[in-house]
Image (spheres, each protein chain N blue to C red):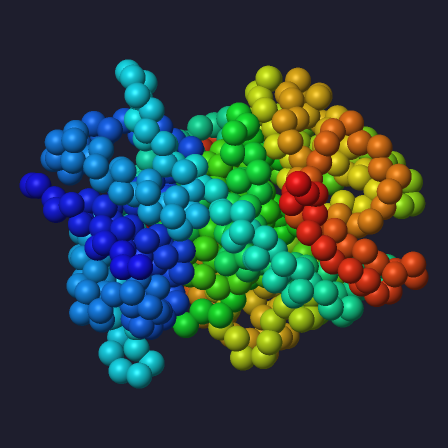
Length: 272
Length: 272
């Protein structure tokens, strides 16, 4: 049965949004809708145009035998900034500073509307990188990793603070945690990664960078490569020496007694 | 500037998919697209029709002052079953049984394509329930909770196996864990829930049901109500006595020596 253009547009929009970073051959749509190639191309043109206008992402048509259409979610920069500035305001609340100087934002990382936006913002920053797998650390990094995984359409793996017995063979490394220079262990199930994969590290918070350094060594143990690293929030610590460049969505400046938030501003992801 | 119907359809489809379970007043679209109410109604009709045809979900128009349009994702039942049967096949691999009889499926819970489907399937089962918050247990329940949260557009909260120091004031309960009858503690940050909220519990695996029971008491501590409970996989244990009805996506039947998978079949969510 032939489908009308209006119905095709609705269906293709849904399909593309649910299959980001996937090359879909045009005949796939032609067959599904019993429509001529020229009609499908025109449909794609309309969708590409509207996605661009609305800052949803880029729909690209690739010519040739391996050709097709591919959708890459990219939140428009002005929309990203506007959203992040509002988020910074929501986070600027001294009640978010918990005993020990911890910064509370689990509510944000449990909110699907925020996660959708944050995931797309992070994915936008890495849209022209080849990424095979996203790596994060249990437990608070998981929602972020999943949000980015949805946008980039790649799997994510979760590093455990202590190699969990329930997960079979694991590869683990030691790392220096936090301010107290304690040596800890982190591990990942052996079959989580194959050699030579490109890894994007995603985590919730960076203080002195110990966890990030640990994940970097873990990636090396798997003979993989870190192609990017991003944290949701970083504190204003200046003596970090990391083997990788990382980016942050927000920077948190706390008072010297660690009791108050002095300033939350946009992170290095937004540096020009 | 006036927008063409074709562009409107693409944009509205995107908007609805990103705002499930949200009542959107028709004037919102009318204003955004500078279009007459009748045109918007017609657009909604086309989208509703196609979403129904394709098994994407239900788009409903509510009349009256508080009216508008609301989209509820619902994977068509034949699509759910087909996907779950294929998933059961993928899981029927003895290498997934780890020492101690643990069942490995972290790869599935780290795959965005699977998570999108699973999240929508679970959400479909509770589409006519009032749900305020999804509750899960760290760490493996998190991806499932997030997947369901995306589909139902409600926040999720993460119960920690031991009340984490970094999260400020917590409410905790004791529970009897697993087969060895050990008493453990689980806790949740105090400001995660308000009184009288409706909670959907989502978890990855159910053995004897201790964790589920614990989460149920935790919900009671917060003076909230459990309106549903669902696990991805349940083992074929028969002596469970739970204070709530729960549903599962798959059932795992292991050999008596706990070394092999005998059968994986569809769970109680698919019982007629």
